[in-house]
Length: 183
Image (cartoon, rainbow, N blue to C red; front, top):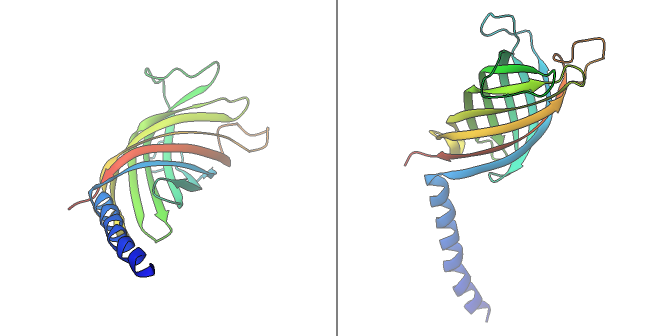
């Protein structure tokens, strides 16, 4: 009976391995959630007086568990497509780069210059969306291309004496997208 079970499971295991290899080789849907913290840096990439922010978090989703690191630079802007509520400030994304590092040390790179954020000056709550592309990676993501969108929110955690739009903060978000790998 053991020989019969092995004979049946071997072809099934080979088919599952081939299916997972081919589905990853051609592309995959990306759906993940991330949670972490962020802070302002002293770097000003565009020499416009607005600092680059850095966010680091843990992510779980369709590609497994990962660490995500994001840099972004926003500036105040009246965004026609977005209506922030009440007295919230509106910000436009100038540039963002992200790296997802997975348990096998593979990395997936993401970039964007399209997005927005609303910030409530009184509470420090912020939320927004960013639309971007995947462009390359390391390990199993070498040559990856695709698109993604993330919605995010969090709170600035600085003392009330500082403006509620700078400093240390929380961040949570969701990413949906798709990438393809070269043949």
